[in-house]
Image (cartoon, rainbow, N blue to C red):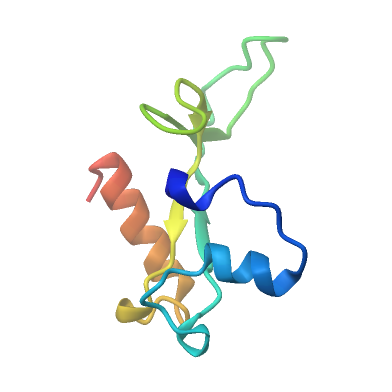
Length: 106
């Protein structure tokens, strides 16, 4: 939220909702936000676990967060599903789009 909309004490749920709603947005236009999370795994039968040297055949692709909340930490890929791309009905499409956007892997 912009700083001018922070710091108010809300005495009711309606007061809180009015503070967080975008001025040009009507409550009936409000659609719940849904997110995708892509966990990319690969198998390598020859890879060994560095802790106990046993065979470990699963790898997870992570990305290092470069900005914003969690900067410097590693994370899986994902983001908001886009209504315009029919991703609410096909969340896998949203997950693929997010991986492409965030990794450059096509």
